[in-house]
Amino acid sequence: MSNSMHGRSFLTLLDYSADEIRYLLELSKTLKAEKKAGKMEKRLEGKNIVLLFEKTSTRTRCAFEVAAMDMGAGVTFLDQKSSQMGKKESLEDTANVLGRMFDGIEYRGYEQKVVEDLAKFSGVPVFNGLTDIDHPTQALADVLTMMEHCKKPIEKCKLVFCGDTRNNVALALMYICAKLGIHYVGYGPRELHPAQEIYDKLAADAAASGAVLECSDDIAAIKGADAVYTDIWASMGEEDLIAERVKLLTPYRVTSELMAATENADCIFLHCLPSFHDFETQFASSQKALGLDIREVTDEVFRSPASKVFDQAENRLHTIKAVLVAHLA
Ligand code: CP
Ligand code: NVA
Image 1 (tube, protein in one colour):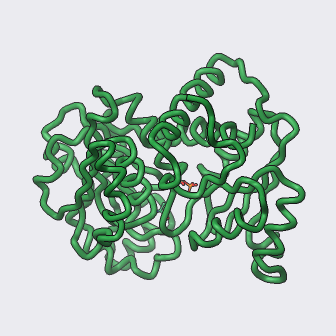
Image 2: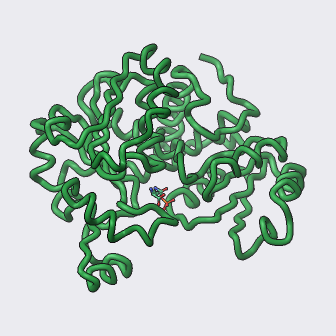
């Protein structure tokens, strides 16, 4: 398939066909192999991208920076403190200026409308590095990791996301599963299941690919999973909801018993990271002092041979590089 993505904005996987997503995954594999062989072509020489972060990041920021540098592109990082955006300058004016200087813009923040407006007003490709309702570069890395570690073709796989099944990571996974024909199960409390409109939006894609998309609070739904996935219980910006989430989500913590309930000895464990799997972080230990155990996964599972979370984190680099190359080269 030839590349139809040049010049477009990567805002959500909903805008991409199954073939385009498969193209990005194949390109990720090629770029990963090239890097491992020490033979990288500077496909983005002479280009410059700007990274706008209104929320914190380790993986996404580093992946965009290293991917751009590996490909010969220049990178500028701006966070809320160091830019005028939204404080002394409107989003429209900022986008206009950035579009005159850069070939592409990455944005991480709150509302999806911000990435849409950046694309509208800048005139250059915009890359969604996470919003409150989507995390499309993450889902690409997740599926690449499944392709590498699951023992079946991807369209025969079953992915179970445990916890807050309507968060940004869960929704991006639902979208990619609908496109590629992967069986998706959101395992979590009903209060946090996605709205019907999400299923409605995905119905045509799921019908075309054969994907089954479902959410359940019944442990029986995880049987046969090829990958069990979880994320923190309160996303960035939701920290004040943590006590309520602990109450709702403790039964859905990923434990060895939950992994055993898949009845699949080959089932892998995935996590977008960062993760609370022990009390070695300031946040987890301060919550513990308040009587709250915020671990979404046990240390035992996190460190088990089934856990592929660091391969998954590395794949952020290769998949983000593919996204940059497909849209900008
Ligand atoms: N998974 C992910 O997006 O990580 P960061 O928040 O560190 O970018
Ligand atoms: N759901 C998490 C993902 C972090 C990568 C958050 O938005 O904080």
